[in-house]
Length: 499
Image 1 (tube, rainbow, N blue to C red):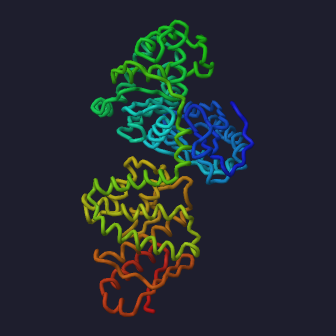
Image 2: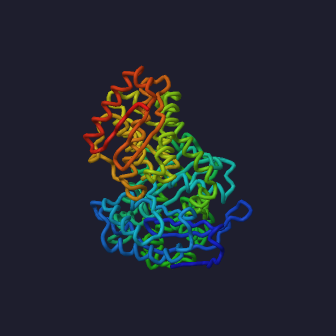
Image 3: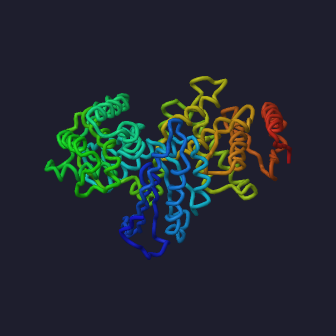
């Protein structure tokens, strides 16, 4: 494990970010000093996780063991820290691996903290956040991050996101795919062409928006910048990349370049081909290396917790505007969902974090209405599951999709989308039941009949209403009767009475 510093600071004012990348695992420990982050130590291990993916995206046992052994060593440093001070994020390989759940289960037993699998767009957003704090980005800035299994492109103005993209191409995967039999001119040609094909769907968006400067982060960028310097080119450029291609073709991986480790040289050809494709496709003149990275972005977001909340709110509001959601109805349902959650939180042992998720789900449950009103729940869930949602990790996104998928009609537990680590199925189903009641009580879309009391006991829920409410609102009683039957079919009990 690489470690450039040891910290003995009190864990109370320290934040830790751990990035489980496709090539390396990185941990950064920082403390809060007068509102700013001061890096205390960095730790890195070369794991080469992406090298364990086969053609069916199955992660082999050797790669899993390398990863778990590394996490075991990292966990020694994580022991003093409370979960609120630590955030662990996983990227491309664990997004793609068909058996990622197996790895995450084992990681959960090794680590004293949970692991989040984040989307490619969320990864790009956090990288942009890191660069915006570390560099001057007063003009439009294009950021390139070539990882082990994916490449992220972010275009922003300071911390404002203009474009985000994640493409399935990385230095490890491309080296394996195109340079397994040696480094040659034809191998570079095939690799660069493949990367350009990957870039085709997003290139026009970036060209139209434009930029004033280009920065690159990650180990590949660091190595390419060191090579450019060593060869007398200054920053990374088309000329420096072409010259490096010639050097690698002539000398293969026996090249020794100051600032580039032997491990990095083993996967440099793949990263070089990807950077060459990006520079050519976008007509980039020069690329400057920035040491900022995903893990710093995670730290800055942890430090600015309210800022993270704002990102989620903006994401939610953007979706609601795009799908012309009835704002007043969404607010009515949200108000009832929050009230119900507060009534049963203690008896159902609901985690505090679940309140935010049921709130977002309540606001978003009708985003599928414009597609088809009779299957709104399925359309809403599909949109949430398959849309890039800045501020939400993959498990949180799936929780939201589950909540809106089953907010009405039959509660089919065998069709729940699997959540890796975020919450237990029992908690998820309880949140679904609360959202269903919140929606049911607002079917009239003109205010709601709020119960005077809610009582829960395991799988049973009892709603108490005023006598006059039940006598005057026959449709409400019919809706409740239907919900009683639907929940009973799923193995749950709902009762309502006058009191």
